[in-house]
Length: 149
Image (tube, rainbow, N blue to C red):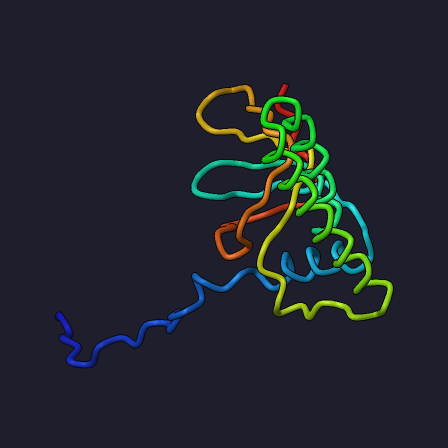
């Protein structure tokens, strides 16, 4: 005997959930930014693994400025002004931290990694160094750096 159901089964409502970052990853990133802490981290983004050391935003900007500075020799003014810009932004963020003007957890939108390695379909990862990504794009994560040698 077969039963027919006229009622539609209600579906779990997840609208807007996919464009919001994982709360705990956002909190970990916030803690890194506000306490200058570093953590090994592996992220799943767009079907690829990105692994490296989570670093505070001000450290990312400072290291980015240092990596741009050698471009001064190649493009005299462009490299210098861009590096100086990132240094100034980094100093501004550090000054806010000293003045206890901390960030809100909810305003943390990006994550920064040092010594980042991307793993795709190849068995060996691609070293990309400094990396910045949107927290809302992260599909999954775990503490620790993936060793893919």
